[in-house]
Amino acid sequence: MKKTRILFVCKYNRFRSRVAEFYFKKINKNKNIVVTSAGLIEGFLPLDKPQIKAAETFGFSILGKPKTTSIRELEDQDRIIVVANDIPKKIFNNRRYNDKVIIWKIPDVLEGGRIRDNRRVIQAIIKKVDKLNKELEKKKWKQ
Image (cartoon, rainbow, N blue to C red):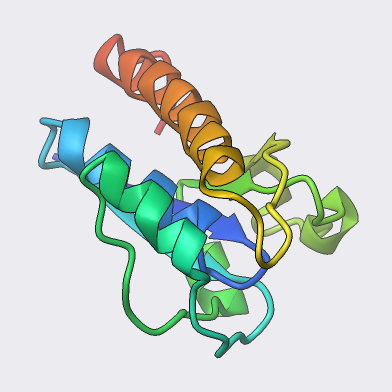
C-alpha cells in the first residue's frame, strides 16, 4: 500500500507546525501515513518559555532544532498543510505542488506571549488535526 505523506508547515518550524506534527503522530493509528513538519524560512531562535510550558500542559514535547523545507520536499508530499496565517498562499504557486496545499489560518503568538495565548493556539491546532485525522480515517482524501 502506498504511503500518504503529509507535511505541516509554518513560518519557522518553531511552534505551530511542530505542535501539529506531534499531535497527529500521537492520535493517528494508520502506519501508512508519514507526517513531518518544517518551516519555510530558516529559523534558529529557541522557543519561548511560554510556548514550551503551554505545550507541556498538553503533554507535548516540541523541543529541538527547527527544520527548513525545500522544493524537493514540497514536491514529494501528498498534502502540504500550512499551519499559519502569516504565509501567503502565492508562495505555493507551483504546478508541481500547488493543488496539494491546505491552509489553516492559525495565528502565531508574539514572542513573550502568555502561556494562555499559546494554549489557545494549541487548542486550535488540535481541533484541526482531529478533523484531518477523521477525514483520513474515512478515506475522504484522494491519494
